[in-house]
Amino acid sequence: MVLSGEMVIGKEMFHVKERELVKWGTLKVSLFIYESGIHAVKLENQLGYIVVLPYKGQQIWDAVFYGRDIKMISKFNEPKNVDFIAHTYGGFLYHCGALRTGNPGKEDTHPVHGELPYANFDQARLLFGRDEKGQYIGLTSQFQYNDAFASHYYRAYPVVKIYDNSALLDVSIKIDNLSDYPMEHMYMTHINFRPIDQGKIVQPVNWKPEFIQLRENTPTHSKDICLSQDYVNFMNVIKTNPEYLQTIRPEDPYLPEVVLYLKSPKTDAAGWTHFLQVHPDGSGDYVSYRPDELDHATRWIIRNRDREAFGLLLPGTCDPEGYTHEKAAGNVRLIPEQGSVTHHVVTGALDPGQTADMQKKIETLC
Image 1 (tube, helix red, strand yellow):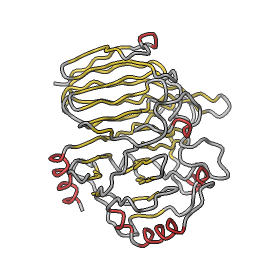
Image 2 (cartoon, helix red, strand yellow):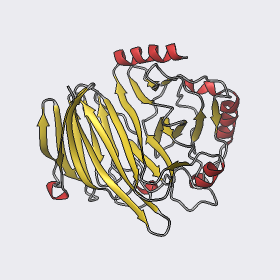
Image 3 (spheres, helix red, strand yellow):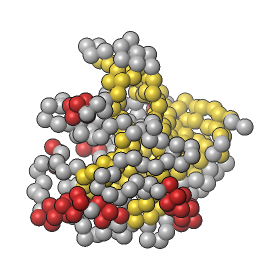
């Protein structure tokens, strides 16, 4: 039986000190405010918790399961109330888009990854229910964008659900084009794990160069970083032998960053594809999505003294090369007038048993 309900939460319900709001079986919701003034909702089950920012991009800022923090390492100890993603970059998951996304090229005027990651959302609601995956508690809010001179008028509704006894998050976003004109659309789910020394990547994508393309240009936000000879040599190895990246080695130079485009991922009978980072202890980090819905797959890795992030798989409607490049490549979609689109991703952590089972499943797809 499918059951559901919801509860409106207003900003007046938040306090500087964390306070429990709702407890439903093993699921719990708490509210608090960071010192920066950002409101936060903590969704918790018996395996861990996430912290979501309902009014700031509905970012998933923290994600802790099985006693480990699965998000990237950064110098940001809390989210900041800013208008540029690089000035608050330390969270686990960002919705990127919805009009533009990626790194802007020299002819582009849009911000990095578009307006959604740091947008000011409103009308936050808790979601309660039981579906085919079990009992869950979730959060949604909305963001309305209206540009009177460009016919850009849309509303976005991200949703994240955490289930009883599961470290996997059900993440989706619905975008309604409220305009009477078609709307250009670009989107990416930006998921930032931390890279693990000797972590193994398991994927349903062939490791040959024709299926894994290295991005060789350096994005504008990294132009001030000098490229070492070790990094140049590393890029040359990856370009012809991408299978080298099946293992994350601590000595490899991921500075300024490594970006790969993956082609033709295999899917299961239900149309979903699956990716793993397997830790030395057998546990895993996981991303799953439908390539018929999000038909571009990016991998991003950075490791330096200030930050470590591993975008194991960033599913999207396009590559992150900015509007002008993606428009020329035919990767900018249109949402019809008064139409809508929904994107859906499952991500999180797996215990050693679940990781082993998923690895076997992925290997049967290859």
